[in-house]
Length: 73
Length: 192
Image (cartoon, rainbow over all chains, first blue to last red; front, side, top):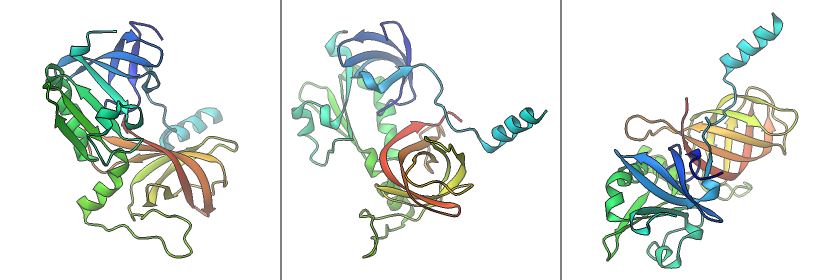
C-alpha cells in the first residue's frame, strides 16, 4: 500500500471507517478519516487497514437459493 | 508522517507506550488505547465514546490537554449481562469451559474455512469469552475452523448495526448444534 490509497479500517475503535493513507512507516500508517464532521489523521498499526472493499460475509439463504436456481436453469 | 500535535494515535493495549498503559490498570493485551490531541478530540471523540454502548470505554485528560481513551471489547458480553440483568452461569464440574457463559439467542451467520465448506444461518445458544454454542443448518464437522458473524443486540448511535466476528475451532457438534472454541473476536460495523 502507498500514500494516497483508499482503505478501510478493519480493527480497533474506528473499524468500518473509510480513509486515505497519508503517511507510512515500517509497521504504522497514518490514515486520514472523515469523522464527526472533520478530517482526523489517525496513526495505527498497518495491520488494521485493508484496501477499501466490503467485508465478505457468507451468502444468505436467499442468495444461496438464487445461486442454486440459476445453476439449475 | 504528519505533524504529531494534530495526530490521533491508536494502539492495541499491548503495543501502547508503557506510560499510557499505566493509566489503565484493568487494561489487557487485546484492548485498545487512543491518544488524541485536544483539537482532534472534537471530531473523533464521539465515535470513540460511542462504543460505550457496546463495551466499557474510559477517558483520561492529560496535563498537556490531550486525552487518552481506553476500550475493552472483551467486556462486551459482561455489558450485555449487565444490561439484560442476566447472570452468567459458572461452568459445572465436568464442564471443560472455564469462563462463565451467558444464555443468549443472537442471530448469526457462519462459514467453515476448510473442506467440506459449510455456510448458513443460526443463532447463539450460549456464549462466553472463550466459547460459543450455536445452531447450524446441518451437522458441522469437528476440528474445522469456523467463523461466526453474530448480530450484536446493541447498535451504535444512529442505529448503526454491530456484529461480533468470532473465529475458532468446532470442538463439538451434534445434530444442528455446534460449539466453537473462540480464538479471535472483533467487532465490526455491519455492512448489511
